Length: 375
Image 1 (cartoon, one colour):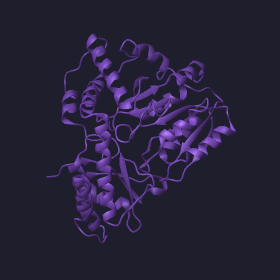
Image 2 (cartoon, one colour):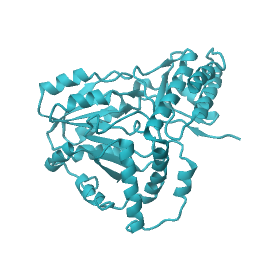
Image 3 (spheres, one colour):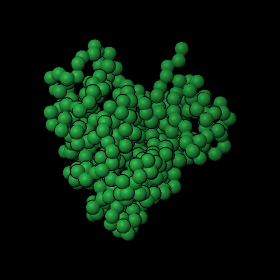
Image 4 (cartoon, one colour):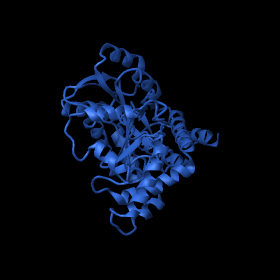
């Protein structure tokens, strides 16, 4: 018999309470029942985002929300900065290219975080830049960016700050309002603990002013239409209301635990994984490691072969992308994750490393992780 465990950076394990909600009978969405539930969801989302701004929910993946954050605030020929430190930062560049946006791509070495001072120089050199697009957590490298520092830089200009927090929010800290984030996008299948299918986008008043000027084509992802509907706890088009019902349950779990406690739990779990990994003599891939996931680098073995041994024991982790393929694995402790998940993952990791021929001392990672978890 084999149990399976999702330690991938999305989709993540869904709590039983949420699964039970998904199993309830279907009902019609244009009803008072839906409006009541959607109103509750909108209020709780603001707690997680730490914002008073409107949060728009799209029936889409997180990439849909990313696209919405381009088409709703820009016009053809506008200039933007895209911060590219991995596959998902690269996606901002690809979106800008797809819509005819003039982009300045700020390239960051994989595993590193952007230097706010460098961004400040770029913005000072060109006051016509309309927006800066960046990550909170670069999922492909396991890195977290200093959004507070970036927000302070961008806020001094007329540009808006757009942050992809799809993998980070709820695991790595973000204060949308206090850190001057104008647009923050997220997705449901990460620390929100529900299946894929919902994308979220918070919008500041500074960003809404750009929305009034935007001339890029939009229909389904029209934020202004959605904002009008939100005022009545509704959506302009058919919502994925069963997913929203599930989200209402998972958000209640987050609110009950307390968002500060949720972030502290993710920090503790991430630290335990990192200390366990280092105790085995392994290296972290990122110089700015995130809470949401830990990227582990290998020099002497094929990381893809290691993943096969992990999978054989029911442990699913993510591999590397582009030049990092075969060199790293990415282990997420995100959402519905506990201390037991850390110990389980490290235990199977040790056995799998022995199977691929690495000379490690069994139990060493577990002892190091225990010290962190015990405090």
